[in-house]
Length: 359
Ligand SMILES: Cc1cc2nc3c(=O)[nH]c(=O)nc-3n(C[C@H](O)[C@H](O)[C@H](O)COP(=O)(O)O)c2cc1C
Image (cartoon, rainbow, N blue to C red; front, side, top):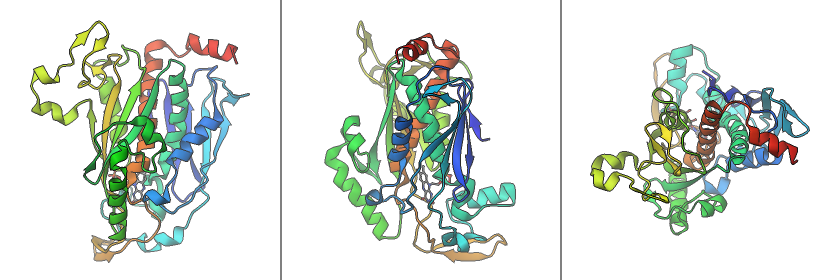
């Protein structure tokens, strides 16, 4: 499946070493101002940061809008965005033509399709996530019209946890660190993994503020279920928590329940969703990323004939995919919430017309 959403439907296409990747976003209400510079800035945030263990693959990631936008405004037609692949070194992958990388999608996708584009992981590569970020940027523009926004930051790298949750600090941090006091130790953990020809996992926190109460479709389209599905579907995510998440199972009700007063909730264990419907409190999600599968140290594996092999992977790979993964988490969260907004409020939002009129 290459599409998701019910009213705001994102379809992505493309492979890591093909002509490029892109998306078609259908259901964007006519009249929404499409800020191209914002879309580009989101793609720039996802770009690798070499000093933060990012891949050395340098893509310009220029977003080209092909349709659905007239004079900077959504027409109501599908918005297609293309991002060309410019920095492709397929030769790095020659040795992988017949060999499966441990922990990547190589083996399982070959078992399913019997054919694979081994260059850079083909469609299974997180290069595709650039298309999600482009679509997510438009979802963010839609959410902006109701005063809602989605932010993220890195809470932990390889078990080095921060305590503070400073989303403003994370925006300018090299590794999107939420806690400036732990940032250097987290960077050191990435560097150490890299020196050992290895990779490292990370934990990302996502926060959506300004989301109105009442979004969500009980019983089989619950907001928390949709968010968990969208985040879990990001490459390398192995676990998703909403609110207090797994910690809730070790609590008593008296500790976990978010009591209320006239101003709102007195704590945030629910993570902004009750009974599958947004409560108006901040939506809080935690995503756990595994270490990058492609590592440079020798590993045991098999080839397509089942023969045992040892590979030391070449090519350009992130040492910690959770860093850039944070931006993808934001995009997927924004897409889910914007989709729910349209499903719950109709496909033509009166307030967007007002904004268009004031342009
Ligand atoms: C932003 C981002 C960048 C990634 N970059 C790489 C990479 O450079 N090398 C690699 O082996 N995996 C990378 N991955 C992870 C793989 O795409 C992913 O592990 C693989 O598709 C298998 O899927 P799974 O881990 O979800 O089971 C990246 C993931 C994300 C989110």
